[in-house]
Length: 602
Image (cartoon, rainbow, N blue to C red):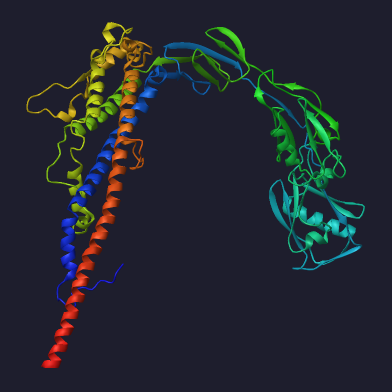
């Protein structure tokens, strides 16, 4: 770009002169830009309508199915015993009695599986207990924790056992935890009935735990999160642990579950629960028992256990006897039957058995007139919203004198002024548009059309109370043309008298156009309109330069013209600057010569 010289010799404001000259040059350019921006607004107006039509079409896709339009109310005279849901459209009433609920097959440990008591390491011949140094520890019995503080002194093994017993009796009471010496080690045992003994846990205080021979906190109950090699001896029946990388296994319902020495009890339970055995395995820390429960109910469900290698099932206290579930025993309308599940469906009604009954429970399905009325009212609201938008676009006229603003013009206006101006520019862009006119005509026509195959009293929307508003001179609004007005009393009466015919008026399916229900016809009509507008202007959110649409191709052509115009105008402006620059240089040379002559001949 050449250096621009602006009026140093001539004294003229060259920039202002060229700016004014370029205004004239930009007049045709401005018209192209405004034409492009107007096309942008028009495409978005089409897409706004298309979004509304698409949304309504998608609702008609579901509304045209009788199962979505029909509605029933389901009631139970005692929902604490039997609850009911369903999708039947018939009015039904049944009486049901439940004498037995369906149950899972369940097999549990016969007693607590953990070994009784805690045993520490062998004690020294004498142990020194120093106040505040190693005299404190805590013991929990079934979740109740107490602090034990030993008296300071030097104890032999027997004296230390006697001292600990005395302190335990003081905080828990006598005959709750028994201490003894096993060889040279202290042992703590809970007092109670075999198989249901309380859990004992010892925790560190200030060093007394180590002093009495326990290396860290311990519990008399197995820890299902540690490897079986660490807890094998804590079972009443010690668990045999596979060596090295070897595996042991057992079967549940014929499915083999393998484990290694590094697996924990939790790992083994996870393998069971994720297997195809159809059984859930769990551990209850309170009762200290394992339970296998079939995932299904009924007599066909079972739990069959067998050791393959190792003694895992023996260690957790279960035998190999096969157990089965139970079927539900019911009587419907006096006819006894059995079910393998507590949830079952008969004639479109789904029963859920919750408890045994002492008297018959009445189950009812009744046609929900109010529900159908509300669905039709929702349909009418959606229809009227679509009609109003289409009518607005068709009837609004273009406001003369308002063209799209250029960037320079926007710089001189406030944001609110720009918004108001553009609202006027956008008004009337689809006035009397042929696609929208066809859409409006099609939608309004469906209101008065009859549906073959439906009884004459209900074969059009007009006959069930869905009419168009009356024309009132002086109060007519063209935006309301074709809107549906509901005579709710007439609609409700039609549904009460013949709900199937009313539903069929909307949902009747046929390959014959004259026999298609209203919702099917609307879906087809809306689909055609959406396709036509998409070909014309694309969908909301689509690119403006989409060459697959009619307006998109026009927009692309205009955008290309604008780019060419930008280049031409830039060159034109440079030409002006070059001419004025040459003039300035010529004047400067002339002024220099005059000055030289003045000096020579002054």
